Image (tube, rainbow, N blue to C red; front, side, top):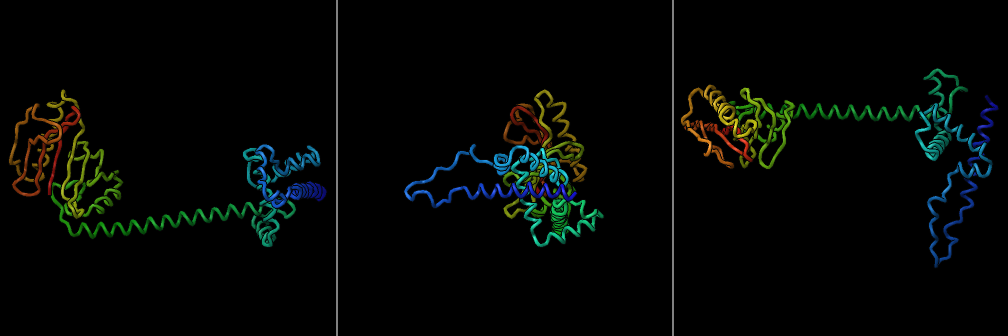
Length: 316
């Protein structure tokens, strides 16, 4: 064992001396004439220390040195074939500098005690890599705990804000998702996020896709006044071709009307017969209307790009 480490030490010392010699042979920057700028060496002429070592001591010695470093890397880190030769020697240089650190003996002894290994069986790199990985794990765990704590504190703060806001606004029979009129836009967004309902802010309203309201799959849009207070919403069914107008779209509008009649406890004030030519892009063709007392509810037919759908508009 001692003979093996003596050979390793000699090879590594020769490697370091070669590197030092190569560095000393490099002309200092101030030897260039003051009126001339030295050209940078071509990229393909740069030599790594192991190449210099091979040129000076032969390929066999260089290969032995590389084999030693690869074996250490394999034991302490992982597959050395996944890194370049230059990366291997940078890693080896880092390990050597850490071994020279005055705190290394304590780390070495702690590693031996913690693992139960015999001191002469421990590679010098093992304690270094072990404690570096441990430090990274501690930092990662601290970050996870900190993120969890921050998320918990935010959730508590949001819950208090939501409860306070809801306490000051009464529910209505026509509310959807239990969102009362008058709550602030930020609070409405918090509620949607808490309920894991995906939404996005589009200009001055909040859009939610794929909601199920009164048995219908709809897209919902929530609107706000100048002070950011929730004061209206729209529901739109899926859009279909003109051929499905009577069988689907008018049926959906009728189902919405029946639902809001139950919610409001009274039939609509107005029922209009809307013919197909009256359904025009850019406006709602109203079929059912509740508008004598707030909230105002309008249910009708609409079109966009030659597709047709039923729509509900509620104004608080």
